[in-house]
Length: 162
Image (cartoon, rainbow, N blue to C red):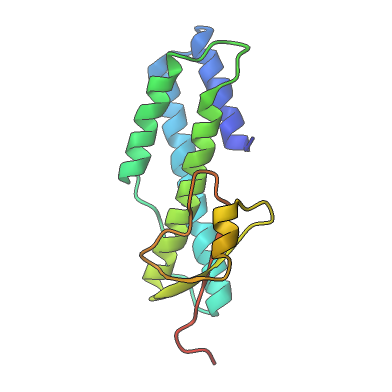
């Protein structure tokens, strides 16, 4: 479980125990997720700039992403089913938001830096579908993830290698 997922789970338990209300939970969770998305964008661009040997532009991810807004709604809806001492679906949801934000940031960084294609590099614990696509080249418009919790990476292909 990621640190952000643990924090969200702890906040959800605080709601169920009456320590904080749903509005406070939403305010704190929104701030945590926004900070995570900013960090994901910064890391994605820094990694890309190292690979391309290019200067950064200062990438950020807008909070108004449809998936981000839908995820926040789902987080709030999930609060009703959270009970102290039981496994919490919120942690899995937050981890999915983190993975999606990482992929979104990577894609946006490649677009901003005019990268047109990437090579899929699978993670050590990749699923069979990802393993079958290892090394394949895709346009930047195609997401590098096949499923939630996908840890595979998009390796940018330089248009004019030197």
